[in-house]
Image 1 (cartoon, rainbow, N blue to C red):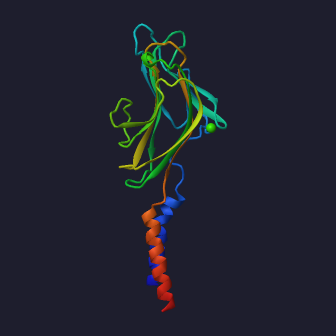
Image 2: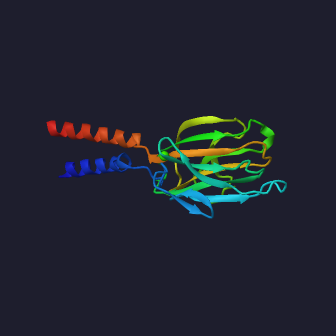
Image 3: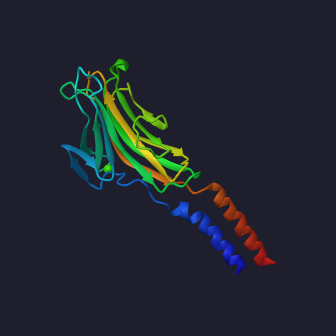
Length: 217
Ligand SMILES: [Ca+2]
């Protein structure tokens, strides 16, 4: 019984991360969109809009539902629509992260916009380990920085992050100060999944070897 108990304990230690699912709600944007103040925002996601960032070109951020890879995706427009300047994006406070355990953050995105570095264009995707809701927080780490790289078709990004708490905020930021060109970013397939802990698997291996040896003696 003691050995069975140990085995159950060892299996339990790796079962949680092994069976873990995507923690992001509606990360593939197939869970529907809602119309909020004339803008179309994916369900499960919040939005922020800093409004006009250049008084010469008053404007606000726009949000659309567009084609994704596959299905639907969220488009964030922070560029020239009748010569507007603005800054905004969508974000989600993702709960259920396991502190200290590596998590795989992955997503797809595409961008369109100017290559002029003087346009004040911002096209970014990142995360905040503090789980905060401030789009200007210094604790946001930008994984994608496409501020002056022009047009790009769909790109896949995968990186490993280690949460320090039980929530992580996924951020997008799209904007422009001088509306010299259309600026937008599409995002799809956002995923945050705990990685099975290698040390946990090693412990299981050692435990099974110990059990095997015990059975044979
Ligand atoms: Ca999709």
